[in-house]
Length: 215
Ligand code: E4P
Image 1: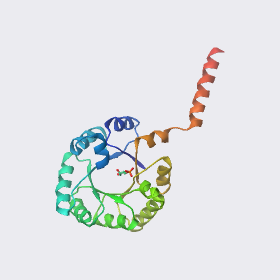
Image 2: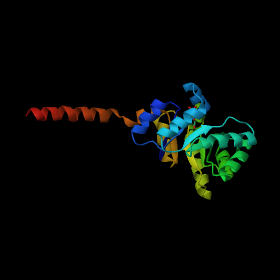
Image 3: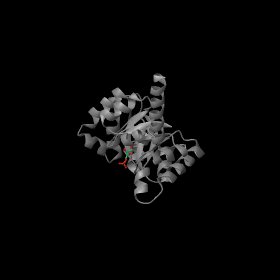
Image 4: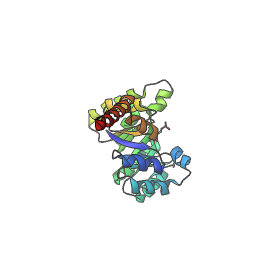
């Protein structure tokens, strides 16, 4: 499974990139606003750090405007993907942009049929939001599983990004469902590394090693 980080914070991106496990980055208007930066300038900076797909969200609401904004975003760097929210206008825009070789990530996917439509329109990525479904008492993991089945049934090349991840269990759920990509917040990535028994084991090995040196 490919691992993306879901943030627009450069320090976090640099740190996780240094682990050697980072395949890409997703941003959204809320994450950009949290950093207080301009989206174009920030995704350019990110693309200079990470060698992989970087999603930048277009804020237009009509097909023509989405296409125009998408073309501008894609010009920033070859690794920039255009993120569009799922709707009729974005399906039309996805068809046009993908036919020009611009990769589109259709976001805010909450049903398997939305993902099917986005894949048919030529989306390179679809982003089902696991956490926001769990927040309202539905099962986000089931959505990912259904999307994987449908896209595999028909051989779509669209990659599924498990998004809106709240913790390690969501990553586990995505991986068990064979999801292509999980876009993971910084704190969750940190939690995925550690286990109390690993820490305990390391301390014991160090203590025993120190003891053996004294013999
Ligand atoms: C995905 O690309 C989105 O940026 C993100 O995962 C949304 O997560 P949230 O529900 O925590 O805002």
